[in-house]
Image (cartoon, rainbow, N blue to C red; front, side, top):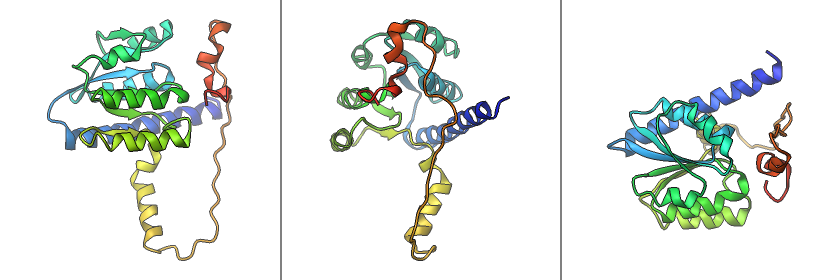
Length: 215
């Protein structure tokens, strides 16, 4: 296996493991019965999250999926979660009263409106990172979420939710490290963001990360 593929696959596995723990903790504390879940966005991330939910079928049941690309439905079905309703319009999925929670794993520029609509529709939300396209959208969404205190809105920043990061934050707060004079941080991606497209017309829909108006 090439180093870059090993790193990418290991990172995906770690993220899935961390999400598993988050959802398990959430379900143990908040849920009294199995929750019907709708997945909005069935690309790489959405399908990856469906694999995690498959391991928690006693708590969560994916009953509906939504995407604007037909071939995404086939990929989502390959997870093996049984019969699921298919939607092209996420608003119709939100209209389903049996769905109590949604996973939003769509391109970044769609996050704010979809999450806002999901809150208004009474759904719990797991919103993939990055939270929103802009800072203003993030502030507005946080403000809106406070109007729905009975609902959970969680942003998918798995690593900061782990005990290690929480412990470091606690150490800094207690002045364990003394005066901090410098922080150095970097993140390197060793593979291309661009993904192959089956049709040139789908370039922007699939490679949205490459275009500033979407990411």
